[in-house]
Length: 472
Ligand code: SAM
Image (tube, rainbow, N blue to C red; front, side, top):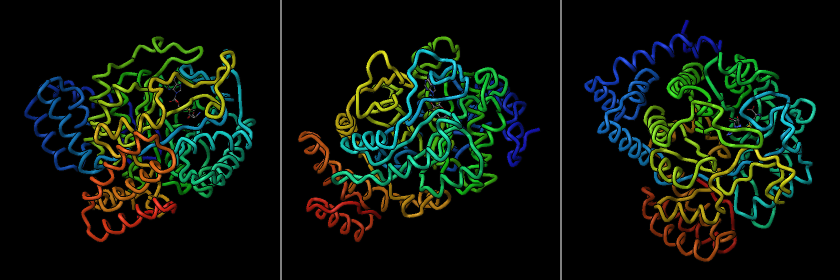
């Protein structure tokens, strides 16, 4: 039985409710009166529920789809302005006891080299990342209680935060590790993590169990209820995601929104971010073996609808996607992207020898961070290296109220300009710096509050004189 407030996975992600939702969407997708009413409702920027959203996803009317895109673009502009937050993944270890059939880290894969970074190797990776200009990382690890216990993850976080290199420091560490206990989540919170990210992979229980045939991840309820445990452990920024390609996308989309509705209903705060990865080729993994791959157009429609349906949730797109796809979906609502990512263990400090592959998936966007930053600016975006919110305690519902009050422009906007300025001073090429300086001057005028504008201008000058790490 469907119950949004239930703490049982099979009740808040009820298979019956998803099937009924899809049937309702099929019945109504050509009901243009209803579609128009839903679009009108969405214009109020209060979001749509999974049933309403599923009707829009099923709607094939080209004119209505264009309206969805335009609305997504507008909502993105209203809530997130033209800022794009930058991050990089850092792979700590590819040891894994699970059997996830789409992932090259699965325990039975003999084609990849198993590696686990020592604290010294982590230092080297972090210095390489800092030398590019990164300030925000997402750490990644396989699940292995012997090789990657929580103590290893905690020690690694401590190491990462402790490294001051030239003018740089990693200021936010997000964590993407397997579902764990409330006690472990509490430890992660105490270690000062930003967002806890865990992809559901698929919300379809039967497929989930087939795709995760062995290991602790096989347990659908344990995995699906992880965000509730994370929140119970005090982490209030959590990141959801579906690995598109594994199951029917309409099922996943409804499940994803139901999960967001559940978190909001139970904890009073929805997910901080939603990621939209698609299955990619990797050592021993052929993406065409999964027959639910989605086209770029459907992918764009999903991104636009996420933006419309959960306007206060950030959206993340990784280098799994090409430059062209990223360009298309950034416009439709993405707020965070990775740049210059290496998906191998130890890949930032040293190129991996060909016979020692540990890459989790093939990267499509292989550009340097400098190239990505310049590209974003050429498209009219402000690349932001800001990490202020969680350092100022603006997590969970406090971040959401900042978003809802429209104060982002007086807070995130100047923070974006100041962190971009740091990037330009410390890491950018001459061409990128020139483009960036012009952008900062033009964007300074877009800070609404006069006093904030003055303080920001002053801090920009101080950054030029060598000071760092200002924030609102
Ligand atoms: N082991 C942890 C877990 O179970 O959640 C950490 C996550 S893993 C390092 C990061 C994510 O990469 C997975 O959740 C999965 O969605 C994604 N992934 C795995 N194999 C992939 C592939 N072949 N292509 C694209 N993404 C993949």
